[in-house]
Each structure stands twice: as structure tokens, then as C-alpha cells.
Amino acid sequence: MAISEMKEKNFEMLTGNDAVAEAVILAKPDVIAAYPITPATAIVMTLNRAVATGRLKAEFINVESEHSSMAAVMGASVTGGRTFTATAAHGLLYMAENVFWAGYGRLPIVMAVVNRAIAPGWTIWVDHQDSMAMRDAGWGQIYVKNNQEAYDSIIMAYKIAENHDVYFPFMVCLDGFVLSHVATKVELVSEELVDKFLPKFDPLVALHPSHPQAFGTLIPPDEFVALRRDLQESMQRSKEVIKRVTKEWAELTGRDYGGLVEVNGPKEGELAIIATSTLAEEAEVAAEELTLQGIKTSVLRIRVFRPFPKEDLLEYMKNFEKVIVIDRAVSFGHAGPIYLEVAAAAKDHDLDIPIYHTVMGLGGTDVNYEDIVIRIKKVLKNEFKGEF
Image 1 (cartoon, one colour):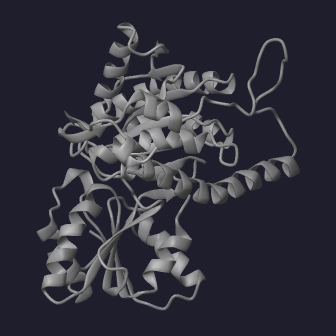
Image 2: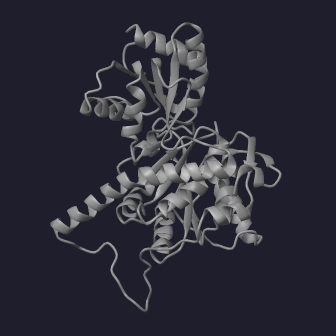
């Protein structure tokens, strides 16, 4: 379906949470399980209401904890159901055991993670410490920069996760309050469009009482390694699937997020800023300001952090004189997790350009484009000491 064949566009003012919920409704999950936690609660409240009113035909399970919510969707997924849950911060940490079980168990669950900083000290504001702590759990990770992308990414995440060449879970991460509770214009798509784009879930394995099987049973070391190797290979294959699905969505809607990495600005220049989520969108304005000041700057926004888009980043990075990475999380005792991955990729492929790094926005600290410009100049001049 070409853009010209679409019906008249339908715009609504939606918070990020409402955008996620509306996209989930269009994806038609069979089972939703959730436990409320700020700032993700509104997502599951909207879905609960949709089920209660008959707008969405699904089973909504009110559970007693986040650990149970992931357990419930795992059970539904392994029996062949499309599933959804949402959480944030300490809720994600509470379900951590089952997050790893779902990832290593290859269950194509989709979960919204509304990013929120981790206590102590106690806070409800955004940084990325929660989802970054789960980066090795076998889940795909998509980080969105606005409410429109949150809406679109939920739908795309199902098509990617359920692809038989991929078949592992995905979390769609959106910044708490900055996106989750702020209403912006979102273009909605029709149920008919999503039905054509997203096929019905075709499970690779579906447990059933008539054919008993074991899931996650005891295995010897060689079989264990084979399973991990298969997950790693699937992660690598998923990169092309993500690009293909993103392109297909762009052809349907006119919204192209660039696959794994979105480039904003010239594809060559003096400085490339690497960042993700809303910091990357703010960095776009900072790049324009730096360019006006004589430093030709572009932004390489990491949209998909898992699988890590090493090849795409290196292809872009080689056309810049220097790079600065801005993280919103810290791998304590070292540096920001995105910087560590970028630096390692450059080293492995003998990309010999200066790569600077800094951390901004921890605990919800407000960061605007002027802050980014000031920080970048200080870092480049070696006038900023420490990571944050």
C-alpha cells in the first residue's frame, strides 16, 4: 500500500503511555499481564479498560508483582499466545529473573519499559540505568525519541520478534515523564493497515496438554553452549530483519527511522554525536547550533541498542573526524555503556579517530540543546573532568 493509497490521516494528542497502549490494541495480543508502577501505569490502565469494554479481545491478568507479570506472559507465550506487559525501574529489576528466562528461552514477548532511574536515592525521574542493566538478557532493545516512534515501534517490535529468523523478546524503551506523560501529536494508523502489516502469530513451539514437552529443562554443557550460540546468531540475523521491517513500515506510513541507526545531518563532517532516546533528539538541535558555530556536526542516533548496530555505526563514524558519545547511564567503575560498546567496536575494526564520552541527564536532570553544546565544547577542550 503506497502512502497515496492511505485514508485521510488521523492525528490525536497522545501521551507516550497512551501511544503505546493504542499500538498494543492494534497488535491484538492474546494475553496482557501487568503490575502498576510509575511512570508506566497508564499503559496497562488503558489496556485494562480496553479489555473490560470489549474494545480489545484479550485476557488481562492482574498479578501481585512484576515477577508474576513476566511469568504470566511467559506462560502464555510458550503456549502460542501473543503477549504484552509494561514496567519501569524497580519493576524491571523485580522481574529480572524472568526477563532472563524469557530472553534465553526465546519467547517473542513485547514489553514497554518506561525508563526511570534506580534508587537509592529514591526518584521517579528518567535515566536509562534500568533497561541498560538488562542489556545482556537476550532481549532486543529499541529506544524511541518521541511519542510517534513509541507508537510505531510497538507494532514493528511484534513483527520483528515473531519472525522465525529472530524469535526472541523485545523491549521498547521510552523516557519516563519526558515522553510517557507529555502529550504530542501522533498519527494513528488503521486497524486494516496493521492487520496487513502484522501477520497472526505463528509460534515455532506451542506447549499443549495433548503433546507434553519440557521447557527450560536440565541440559549438559555442550547443549547449553549450542543454545547460547543460536541466540547470538539470531541476534545477528535480526539486524537485517529490523531494517526490512522498518523499511516496510516507512513505505506504508512515510515514517522512516533508519533501521538500527538514524542519521540526522550530513553523513560526513567534523563531529558526530552518538546518543539515544530524547537526548538524541535534543542533540539534533545542538548539532545545528554547533554547525552554525563552524563545527560541522551530525547526530548518529542509536535506535536499536540490542542487537548492537556495530556495522552501521562504523560505516557512518569513519566519515567524521571525531566522535562524542552521550550516555544516560553509567557502567560504574568504567564509563557509559553506549560509549564502551562504541569504543570497543572502533578498536576491533581499527577505526583510528578520537572518541570522547560524557554522561548527562542522570536521575531526570534536565538537558537541553544548550547544555549539550556547552558540555561538548568542554569535553573536546579537555575542560570537563570525569564522566558526569
